[in-house]
Length: 346
Image (cartoon, helix red, strand yellow):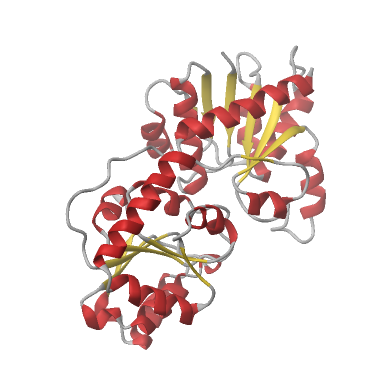
């Protein structure tokens, strides 16, 4: 049994927090003693279940206090994002644990530490990285971008039965409405493809600062009547069981959790042909990856017109998820990194 504490400086519950909750719960099922610091209380605790303790913290100082309050040192501190790395470094300097935890950093995004701050980024990155003895990247793409030596461990999701009911004529987008996610690209592709005139609708599940831009562009492109802005949803698995196609437009996606979840639902996916999508959708020969928006529109139109082809493609993605992107596979690979980190620590 390994004592593991996952740490994220966050009061939200999005991709990273969901990643932590699923992995922590899987590790607990495997017999490890696991707890989590950070993340929105109700959603994190609901995802973790009753066996994994959770402490909410949204500031670096709060995370430091929670780490200092641990009754005994964990074997592994698995930190997620730079702020959590910084908190672990500060806590380790303030508390003299008898056995120093092995600090393992999981990198979720394709960018170097501290890249969000031009003035203090390099200094923050240097301090944060100081205690890290091993680094996990969620994709080969992220590993190449973050710098340093990384173990690539692809994100897993729960296996699902293949939905057997008819699918709606909807193109689904599931992501935060932030500039880097390029949701407006999805609208342009949908409009150019002409599938709205053949009875298809565009559904966008998510919210963020780009919502106004999405509303304006839908009107400008003449697809407002065929576009549904669903906001943040808690029933994404149901949406994925019902939709006809998932459109994933983010060109620099670290891996793309929504894409892996769509694979588990047997949902046909059209994705930007770059970033982590090359390792998910691109893991099968028939993967639909586009080079530019015109190519995407052509591919979307072809998928929309080929019901049998969509079903076969969705089945191939479903099989690939069950082979390559399971929680059990992720947890086993993560545990192997922990073992090496513990050996390096000693």
